[in-house]
Image (cartoon, rainbow, N blue to C red; front, side, top):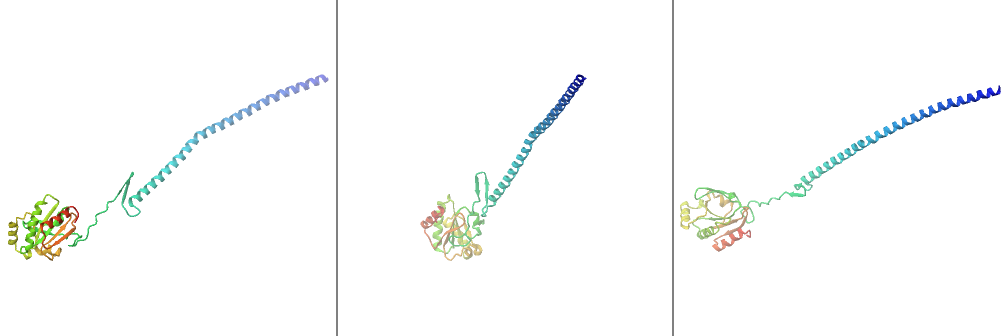
Length: 256
């Protein structure tokens, strides 16, 4: 009887161990499978995160680069605008490494029939009937000689100026003879032009336009005007041909 009880007890224990082993193996397999699934899911998510991360970082870098580029352009435009307008009021233009500054204009003296001032403008008729304006001669040196037919020293200067006109006719020089016709006689003027064989222009001062604007007080009077229309010297009274030549040479060489 005891043997049977012992046998059945051993059998029960054996069956219990077998059942426990099977259930433990299944549990272990379930735990192992669940663990693998969780690990696979975690690895999959990590892989996706790694793939997505560069795109996110790339977006950040592109945004940062775009912002830096925008700031640089804004700064460049502000700098260029400041350089173009000039903080000190100077007009400058910047292009590359070259800066071009606006060229200052030449200061023109005020109009006055005096040495160092701009010669007064006039527009008068010549003995041949054509019109002559002083501003049309800008860019040339000009000698204006004012005279009348009854003035003896004037006659001597007319001859001297004719000789100098022929000498300097190929130079940048114009010699003009201005006759005070309002206090003279046209026939006498024409006769003198023929006798002296004058070939340079003779202007008739009708209305005393020249006499008044140039404030002529003595006969003869000569004005030496440079290329910019500025009076460089005034000769009053009779001068010799040598005196005229000296002043003309100085006028042409900008030494008067």
